[in-house]
View 1: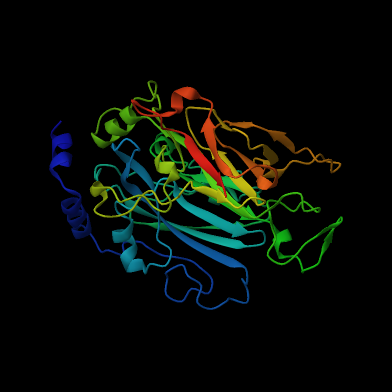
View 2 (view 1 turned 135 degrees about the horizontal axis):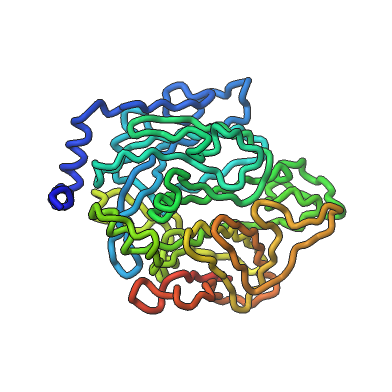
Length: 403
């Protein structure tokens, strides 16, 4: 009980000062990135040995987000440290956790160098949890980089590790911490991740079985016929929080795993009506001014455009169904695989709803050419999750606006 009381009288500023006083600000921060000359994970000069290198730098720590009913929620998460010098990474990452985690995008053929730095739990200095990045569904992952602590490396506080991925398969993936996975995923260490296909880079005028590719056209997969072409894409990650679990973590109490019951269902870390707000949400005061909800769920299209929804579910408690009204969804990919039979038969289908369990993803194209302009809801049919805690008319719902 004494420890709990001490945590509550420590302000974020005092806790930050105490942690920084304990050691050098750079700690064990080390970024590996071909062509990066100063350690900020930004390529300064193309390395001829790695011409397709792509680099990211994430921090792993804690912080706060704000629920749509105004309730602050303590959470664990990842922060974007790309572009920061190593000596600034620890300070920027403390109380910098985002939910969802920073969106990661790569192209087929890239060599991805992803550095993870464990910045520590500022509001829980008694915790020395290691962290990892698990690229969920990544094909042919080297075990050392898989993120599963039973067979690979996890990163202790104040240290860094650079993961390497040779990206060979396009599609919609997701990533999360795999250390104490149920706890860390419930606490918010979840992010959107997708890979764009090599078909995007074909020469202008390429004939795809009667469909003519032009420079600037984008596709969900290497479909060979243009069937997965889209004009804009939006990652939409389903997730949910149990406030009692988060409160227990913040207050240094036993974690109620067996009683876990999520009461805040969200899309990209927001409940309705916050899902309709563009850009980042205001920073919670508990974070000392650092924004933590940066991924918008605003979906806007001009009539005639094709919208790719990159749907994923990383909930550790629920299967969720997302539905639309008056706007059919064409499912073209599932769990980062094009829906085609081994013989090449098109297995895509039209539907009004998609159900995803934890760890599943779906690529859904909305063709707005045959629908009148207007606002179309995207919502869960799990009706008890159309609320923000005890507040009705919120939760897992967004708007698709066709202009």
